[in-house]
Length: 452
Image (cartoon, rainbow, N blue to C red; front, side, top):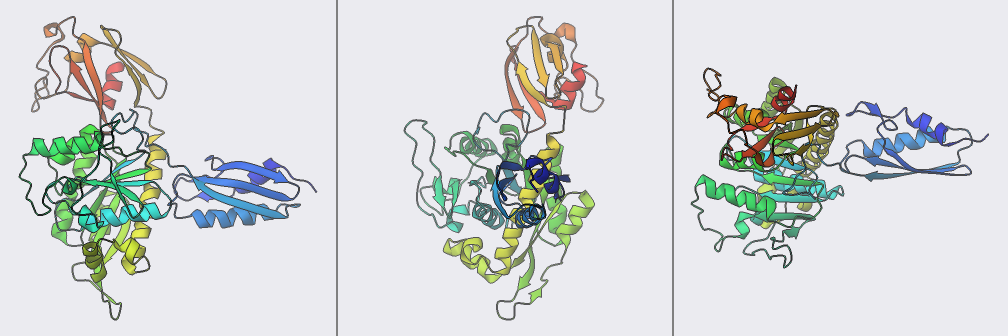
């Protein structure tokens, strides 16, 4: 009895993606199908090489296809194609980087940089192209953790951009590589530190990356704000420790990203319990479950726990992160699990974001009198520039206490025009006007409503 491609696709529809809640055929995962006699071969193209159910998919697909009468051999090739984060506005600063991910914490001392370095390596081990940007300008520790100290970056002769270092399968850059002395204290005001972050975003030849992890300093200061306003972040991973005091402060950092509409990929509980190197039993030095409790309270994903092991500190000092030095240790396995969960959650976020219609696809400012925005749902909004300028939502134009508008359309120059338009994170556009005004951030929702 003969069979055809449709017969194969029909049985493959039984396989459901547990995260995206659709079958792998409807999701477009099946590629390059070939049928020769009784032999069937095809690819399953996943949204990330770090997919936690990759092996299960391969096994299920082979088993289902073998049930078809006439099939004698099945070859399933697992591939991946990490998608660009659907931010709505092209990432002009780093167009070849698909997903920019902030690694953040509300307070210092939670092991955020250790998590960042090991998470980057764990992602790279799955086959992903990964970069790590050390934006902790006041306490850069990534160079020591990766075993690259006292070296300064070269410059590409054509682009004039800095060339990132490569170690353990990832590209990375740190302010620690720009210091003459490794123990030199950096005494910088906020604007200087922010300028350096912008230089790392637009002035480094990152090349093609699936993921760029950005290790942020603790808190919610200038660096965090600069980052969210300079590039469209795919999401943020929040690192905490189990104690209530750490959890309470970390919540503030999480809320900051939510306020600027950067999706929370998930929470990581670091130093979850001490693993004895002799008996291998786990002791909860701090409390246990604080990270998971916070994720439940705030309705954000919990990515997992990383235990506290002596080898983590030793590996970091030696310059070989635990994922590379001791992948079979409890912490090494925990980081591998975190990488899978983070990649899976990001795929869920990107798929959900693709369904959002209130996001601009193109902004046309060629007409000096009218700005035209084409939305992803096909809607076209035309805004008279004088009207759009009069609806600026900044504190100079709207009373923050009463909500009263402090300017009128009559007070605006009839010939006012847009000088430039730039994206702000994943939530707004920044307009610079010909009258010198440029402090207003127009959220996508606000623009969509004004277009009505």
